[in-house]
Length: 222
Image 1 (cartoon, rainbow, N blue to C red):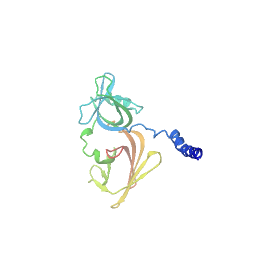
Image 2 (cartoon, rainbow, N blue to C red):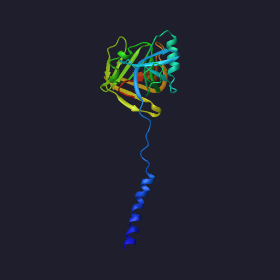
Image 3 (cartoon, rainbow, N blue to C red):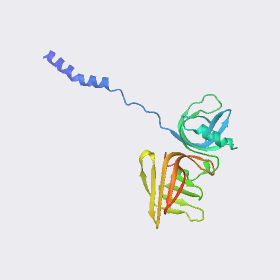
Image 4 (spheres, helix red, strand yellow):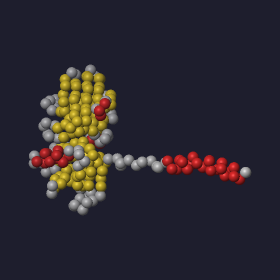
């Protein structure tokens, strides 16, 4: 009886032992990127980033986002500093007069003029798109879509958002006798007037008129 019981116990333990050998634990992925807005400055052949309302300064490590090239072109035009909206990983200090390093993985926006850190609406926005000749601006948030144009009152409309292939987005509205369609795509876009670089291109169709420009995600969306 004891031999039989021993064999039965051994067989019962086999699945548990096998499970222990196969299970290796949940793999850990890379930590999520941190999105920050702040000022970019060049010093000693390096770029340094200071987040809005902070004193800390991080040396920029460009992870193939193009920020070094884009910032270099804008700074060459005489700008002392630039506003930048970036995402990446924050690392420890490298003893180079900084508080650490900012290893970039995403460039949202770089500009030499505009509100920058003083943009009070940024955190509430899902998306902002704008173009020139003629100037137009669309701001999209949780409460609706607002179209701004010189000589016109701001036009607030409800909207429908649609996810499209290849990371594209569509925002459409048909209300108050107006038809509006805003299409954005993940493509480097440069504002021809200011030189600002955005991570999205935009096309606005308003009552049959086609207007083009650039766009970027607001603080309410990464």
